[in-house]
Image 1 (tube, helix red, strand yellow):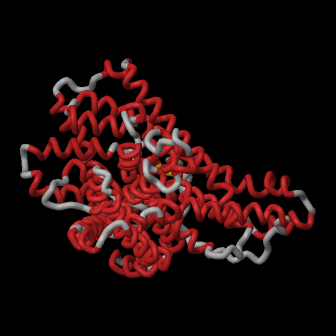
Image 2 (cartoon, rainbow, N blue to C red):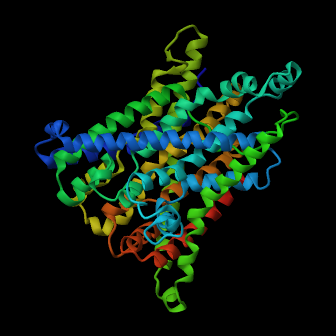
Image 3 (cartoon, one colour):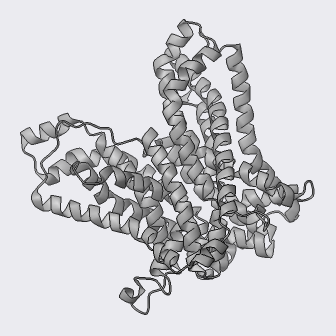
Length: 536
């Protein structure tokens, strides 16, 4: 019996149309750049020492960033798990979410105020300290990605059943044995996926490297693409770099998709009736780790405050931050709403493919890869491919494509909203897909046996999906509001977003003004995180 009725097939058509819509920008961008470049790809660049240096630094900073983020997150996650009575634990988890989705320019402004040439902590670090370069890039990436790793590892530990700890207590095994037999098996299956995901984020990093790189010796592929297109307009070179980046990040993303997704946004709702006894010395160490984590995450944000005190009332009133704030919110809300709609539509054919695969397996016909149908796996890859596609290539490729067809200055704000929608859809997919598949597992056969129409099914799905939709909207809204790469291509002086305003102030060393804009954006993001936590 087919799960989807005729109106359901219409939704399937809309779903495939949504998939086409989010893959079309990638196709058009590469087509426009290849056609405009004339000579195509500059393969000779692959043997150039300049390319080797960029590739080496891109891989080096991504490996170090991912490794340090996961290594530092592990003891923090253990502190959250083994000390359930920690004061402010839920607030800390909310702060972790805020840090991961925080617009990058807020962090950069805080780091410059804290560790820049005139920063608070510079006298303690010595005359040789320099924020710009590998040091600053690693600090920023750890700040942004360690909180994500903390939540992911904490949720893995939360999955350990009470019975395991009871048995361990009865057998009186040592702490080292408990780690080897209980804790390590709970997280080792996700460490590779977690590290790979953080690596992809750091490998594709743009704003952090652009602002804190400090020169040609600290340039990544993404920034090199930006320089080739924005300043030199060397299309063949940019395409070569883009294909290399897409090959490396795409291959790793392919492997991650085969191993599974990473859960990290579920609330702390686990009610444990039994917890292992932690030695007093271990408790002290875990408390210390917890407090250090608070300090590490709060210091760059608190460093913004002195900049506000440096502004007098006249400068406060003279700064035009109202319209950039409104523009940021409007663009973010538009992109987030479109992302939710398109994500739901494109997940419809994916769900149909999964159900058909299950029916085939029940009938003895196997057409799957590790439990996934080939069609389902292909649809998931298409839905999330923009996570590894270079945003700078998409932006410049579409700019070149539309340059002779429309007034780009006039339609720039629309193109920014649409491109932001495409870029944040992978995150919406990762949030909504598990909940929808869970609904299908529990209610698909019942809906089919009752012969419910698609409209009736949607009425049943809404209460099931309401909280997930709200939390997903909050998440993708935060991500859309922090855009810098897309605005750097399509933006102009007639309209400004808060992240770009922060970048403009910080780029001219107007740190007090940048701090004010950053605090405003931070407050907005904090309110959205509160909405997320309340509905998660």
